[in-house]
Amino acid sequence: MDLNQTSPPHMSPTPETDGDDLCRIEVTDMAIDGVTLLIGLCGLVGNGAVLWLLGCRIRRNPITVYILNLAVADFTFLLFLLTSALLYMMDNVTCSTVVSVRYLSSLFLLSLFSYNMGLYLLTAISIERCVSVLCSTIRRPQRLSAAVCTLLWVLSIAVIATVTSLCLSHEHEHCRMALISMYALNFLVFAPAMVISSTILFIKVQCGSQQHQLRRLYIVIFLTVLFFLLFALPLSIWNFLQQFGYSLVPSQVVFLLACINSSINPFIYFLVGSCRQRCSLVSLHVAFRRVFEEPDDNPTCSCDTTMDTLAPAW
Image (cartoon, rainbow, N blue to C red; front, side, top):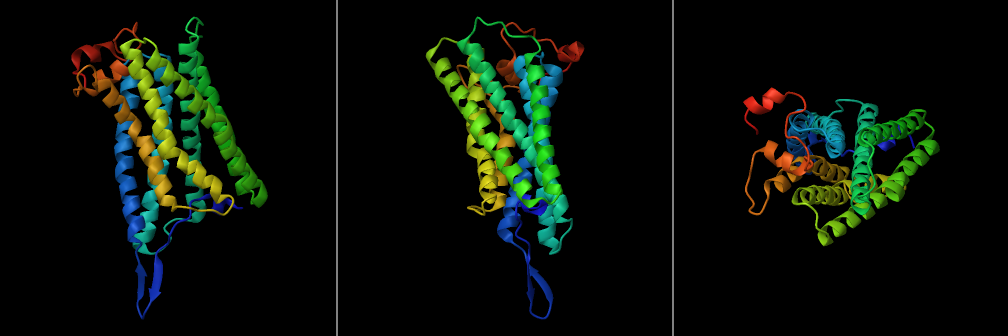
């Protein structure tokens, strides 16, 4: 398997020769790519808002470190995905190849890098919160979140660098085994740990007497994991089956689902933070503070304290 085979297959416009140089535009593919672009643009705006609010308007704490890194991973994934979708649409409209398949394959591998990072971070968040609930007496190291995120970025870079180098070397079997190993790592290590820890966390919170603010945070974690399993995991399954020659659905469908997953998290944060005893919409800033600020946090701004007092929260 070479690098070209690592990219999702694209349904190229089908030429028709009846005296004129005409081509048939794949309407279904165009529609799916168009929806992907619209959802992805909303996701970029949402994740950008998360980065700004949690980075500058809300006091930094262990959970916001994870969420900030998750927003970076989702934002990066959407950038690569939307670039690929736009290039595919241009190919379809012009009935020609705008860029080389090798370039599209590189975009695909970069999107896998961000995708893997999102999975690793969700696993770390679930395990960290589960341990904090089960072993509340254990004192947590102050810089643990930053250290874990750094290690996960290094792991994600190492994994995708290994896969890319093997595929670029045109060693077919080595490339195939590297991809299978990457998906096996996702399926057998990170995904089960994420599901088990988030399930334990959800059950423990439902049966225990947690503070209302912490309950909101744990509901956010559970919903984020649930949507990842529903919308993002099919991409790994699809890619894994591709290595054995199986393709159950078009590539555009699984990438649309992955786009929904990377775009929906900011809306989860906002909706959960907006609901108290009576569900009512509040400002984005207030909703995020309700979810992510720990009970003893000072609601001052970590980047500019005067901005919080002078500028209205949104």
